[in-house]
Length: 280
Image (cartoon, rainbow, N blue to C red; front, top):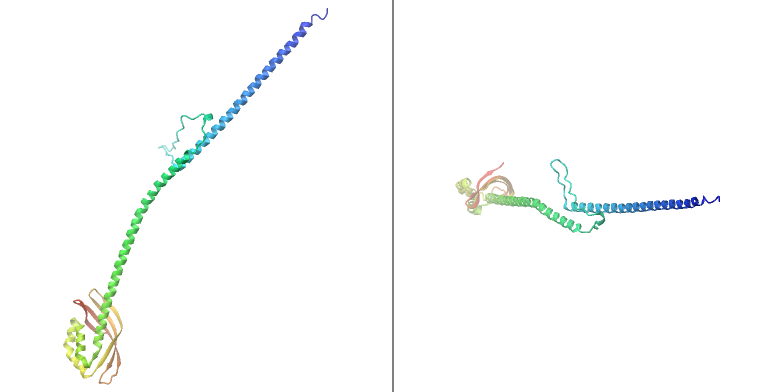
């Protein structure tokens, strides 16, 4: 019986092969489970990382928006280092991070409005003194202009009054008629005062007699006038006068030209001629 000893050995070999295959299968299954677990862990880690980045970006955007709206300037410490904002103590889990909402927008709007309200009073405080200074300057300039205009008008009126008096005095002196010599002489005296009146008064009778004897008729007119000097109550006026003379000597409307320096002063409430000088 030569084959009796080989039977048990042949049956044990397939059994060991089956065990080895089973163990190999179990090892492959364990390795597959490990790979699957690693893949799940990797996927969860990637998801958590993305959520963390998204939350950080949202928080950075919110912080930037609030900082720009409030115009916040970070304060520096005595050592020159910039103080960092405190980190939130209770940070939510990446998986539980809430979605960004529109809550910061009303805060930014209200902060911007508050900043505008704060800036407007500051600008008005700067403009108010400037406006007051400008108004005071305009009032001062207006007052000076009114005062200057008043002085100029008053001076013109006073000059015109002095010139009118000097003009009339010269016309009275150069317009004589032998038919009414006394009236003409009296007219000269009425418009004169001071030294000129006294001198003319002493020679009035002789003057009237000469006019009558020569049967002179003179007609005077004023060609030009100019104020040489003027004060508050007196003035010196230059007068260019023309005269036409008719007399017994043969003159017939003979023209003559005279230049006078006439002094005019206040005599009470009237202006009168105080001095008459011939200017060569």
